[in-house]
Image 1 (cartoon, helix red, strand yellow):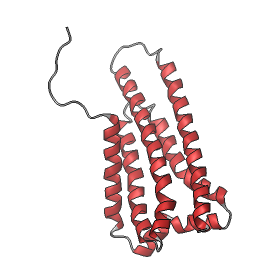
Image 2: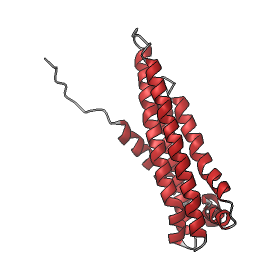
Image 3: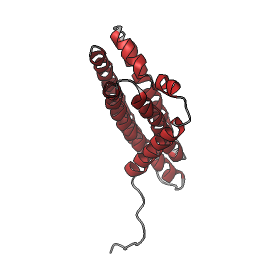
Image 4: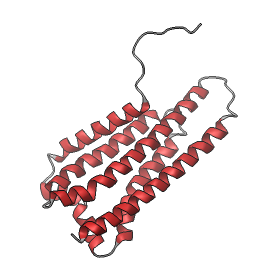
Length: 193
């Protein structure tokens, strides 16, 4: 017979990571209040992105978009192999949120608000969603390593888990690449408006 347990259920990984990103966005907006407006506008980089796209440098726009999220995904991948990586995986999403909070305020300060939001929001939301999936998988693998390190359990089954984990991360990288290319082409289209 199954034993009933009472008390609060642990928070799911999705909610934890989502809250972490939301706290990061809030902190980014609060920090941006102390940054001068011209600095904040140049920091968010939307004008530079549209200028590069207008000049036909779509590959450079792609590289700028992809490199930031790719580094965070790589960090999440390696943190997944750490039995005590959970706090850092949560902080990774908060760090991404912090950057988004700064950029959101910078986008609102640009001259053409709708153009700025159209150039910023789609890729920001899509790439953050991919990062949240990466961190969720990293949390799962970290928790497995933590449980295994506290028991004398057989670790032979981890080979399949690591292979599946790596394949999922390759898919996440592919999704980020597609989103970054779409972002470059969207910036090219918006720069002609």
